[in-house]
Length: 146
Image (cartoon, rainbow, N blue to C red; front, side, top):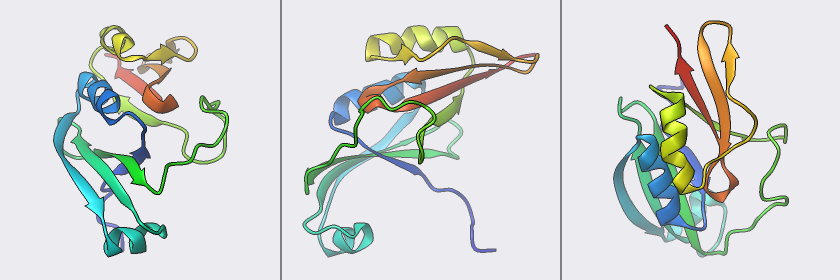
């Protein structure tokens, strides 16, 4: 088998501190921050002159990670619109299982979280919702019921 595990999901951000604060409030743990540049970074990304700051966050169970990157060079580009709808092609959200959906929303709102629709009940199994977080990232929240 070629795949051992999914290591992380990477997201490019403009405001690293705000993005870290949002995901830490969600319950992720900051593993560390680093500066990345040089030949290996250029080769890996297919870009020239890569110089970026990264932050690695992990879920409390230690099985999943989120890598936030803030590019110094080359400048990050934006596709429009910034707040893309959920049905756009490509990566569209990151989903997290949470203990209490309502209390999680309450904690995330001061960090800019905006509910996209409503809290939905999937049968008697889950409460689900999508929020728009920092940089327009759609974050799914799921609370298992019962």
